Image 1 (cartoon, helix red, strand yellow):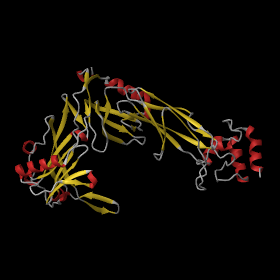
Image 2 (image 1 turned 90 degrees about the vertical axis):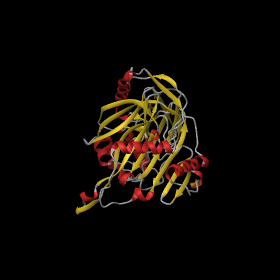
Image 3 (image 1 turned 120 degrees about the horizontal axis):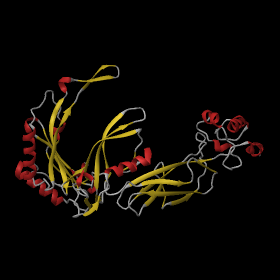
Image 4 (image 1 turned 180 degrees about the vertical axis):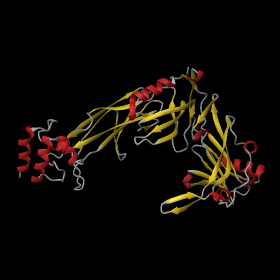
Length: 428
C-alpha cells in the first residue's frame, strides 16, 4: 500500500458562499478582540465579486463564491524600511497567530501549524550597464510568516486552497492574514490508491508529451527527490468539484539546454493519469482547400466517461466528442500564403483529470512551391528541388511545405507530379 495507506477519501465539494452578514460578523469580532474594523462599512464591491470593509489603512476583503478571506494593514505591508525590523521568534509568532485566529474565530478545526518563513525586503543598484546587485544594507527579512495547513482524514491538503498565513512585522505588529478557500467537503468515500510507482511508470511510458494536471511537460528528464501522500486544493482562480488524494512530488526538471528547475507537482493517487491522443489523421497531414477532414481522439487510463473538446491554437471552440470533422480554407494574407492551423483536443475524465494533444494541418496551395502566394515560373526551380532533394527543399523553404509540390494529391512528391505541375503553371 502506498505510504502504508491502502485507501484515502474522495470528497465532493459542497458549494458555500460568504455573505455580507458573515463578513460583518468577522469585522465585529475583530473589533471586539483587537480594536480593528470598528467603524468599517462592510458591503459588496466590484459588481458583487467581492465583499469589502475598510478601517483607515486596514482592509478586509472576501470572495463570496469561494470563501477566500484577506485582512491587511496596507501601510505596514508596503512600508519601506532603512533598517531591519525586530521580528518575533518562531515560537512567539506561532503563539500570537494562533491566539488571534482563535479570538477572531477564523482558525479552522482541521488546520495544523506547518512552518514559519520570512518575507524579505530587497533593494538593488546598478553597478555597471545592465548589471544589478543587492544593496546589502537594505536587504533583510522584513516580516515573519506563520503558515497553517489544512488536513483531511489526517493527511495534508497542499495547494493555495488549503493554506492560511499570518504575517507579523516590526515588534510583532500584525500585517496581513490570507486564508485560502478551504472548501467545504462531504464526508468522503474511501477509494483504493494506485501505487506511486505505477503512476510514475505510466508517465514515463507516455514520454515527454505526458500531461500532469492539464500541463504538458516538455523536459529531458524529471528526477523525483521526495514524495508525500495527501490532497490538493486549488485557489479561487480555478473551479474544483472534488478533493482527491494526490502524491505531492518534490522534483527537479532538466530542460533541453541542461538547466535545472526545482518544483513541486501533484499527481492524482486514485487513478492512473488520463492521456489524450489524436489517432487520426496522421501527424503532419496535408489537405486540399475546402476538403472535409475528420479528426479522431482516444483517451487512455483516467476514469470514464470522458469529455472531448476541440479547439484552435487561439482557443476558438470547434466541436466536442471523440470525432470532429471540419474544412479548411486558404488564408487571405499575402504575408502568410501557407495555412498551417493547429488543432487541439482536451480530454477530461469523470473526476476532472485533464490531458491534451494537438496536430498541425497544412492546407496545401498546389503549385505554389516557393510559397510566395502565386503560381508562377518562380516555382519551377523549387519544384525541381522538391522532387530531387526533399531535404534540401525543406532547408531552403522552411516556411513552405513539400505537399505544395504534390500536384496529383496522392501523398507522394515524385516525377509523376511533373505533368500536373506544368498544367497548373500554364493554365489561364
